[in-house]
Image (cartoon, rainbow, N blue to C red; front, side, top):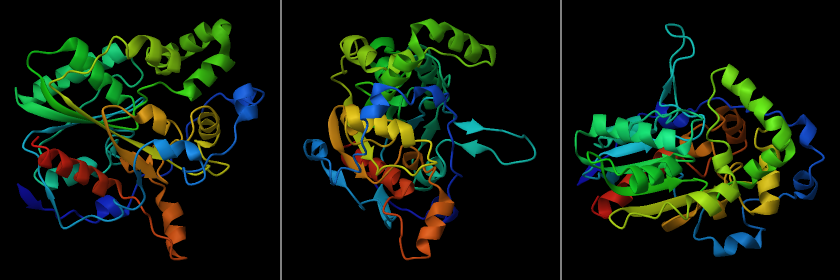
Length: 334
């Protein structure tokens, strides 16, 4: 069915403040990965993107008047270090949402939305088991569509192919910048840390309550030689995917180093996941000029406020993007 979509402006005119990832990288600058890395841009100047699907520039710059509503619920599956809702100071500040404004916009358009929470840095197996439980509890036996960001796509693939929970019926999986073929930045980190120092770092992380199962599973070796060969697609499920690419990030961006490493090894990327690695199933295209955090509406609003003063407006609206995915699923019969 078609539903008129009236989305409160506060959901797409504002966005979360810039997120800085504090990685222990000071000693890594001598790495051959970094020494060889050269900026590759969004793909306009990098020939490697020419064979990587449709380039999407401003298709999702604005919210349309209406979108079709899928008949099955949509499950939103978060990525590494993610969450559904985070309360930093209960009673003092409002919660932080991973899917900022996205779930609200989908609900406003008549979609039954299920947001799941899995162990932020747990293994794919642990995360997939939690994902299955969350869907089973919330869906009540109904068939579902899954939209997964980043590592969430790997969790969903594992759940569909290996766990096959009897009370969870998945019709489609849409992955957004999921590292299906691993990450050269994960390779870089493990190369620089070294096997001798790795146990010590893991002990430090576990001491502060952080699980470590996810990290090695994001390497290209693990994904290509272990995960993918033993995780075949379910022929009863439709698989779709999107990737993203961005220009070389500014000096203080949390993606500055990772973007350089991935550009050199894999080509165009969104700061954390390459376009090549994001492709799985039916590849719908590459969002040009979009970062890994832009994809979940965590755009730096202050940057765009300043740009608007000189007439530069955003070419990507995450709310419009996810509403369009829902529209696509509805038209596919899901």
